[in-house]
Image 1 (cartoon, helix red, strand yellow):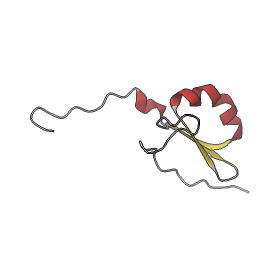
Image 2 (cartoon, rainbow, N blue to C red; image 1 turned 45 degrees about the vertical axis):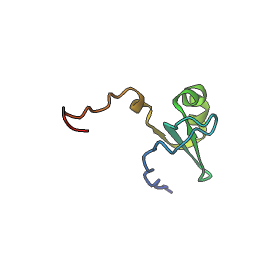
Image 3 (tube, rainbow, N blue to C red; image 1 turned 30 degrees about the vertical axis):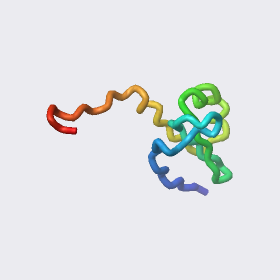
Image 4 (cartoon, one colour; image 1 turned 90 degrees about the horizontal axis):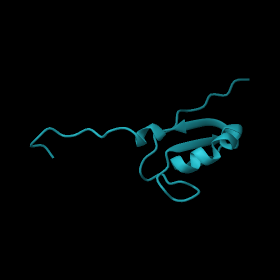
Length: 76
């Protein structure tokens, strides 16, 4: 039997780490249907254990190193 997993919605600034309340950049979807959210710090700290229990992991930590786009002069 194959189980299809629906794609997760992207994480937003409203999504908060379940450990400390900082902005979440990692969503761990569990076999039970629940999910856990983690900031980059706690995702690194607990990463190995999370991979053991995860059905799916959405990792958006790359957003922390992206340079934001700058509007051309005169635009705001």
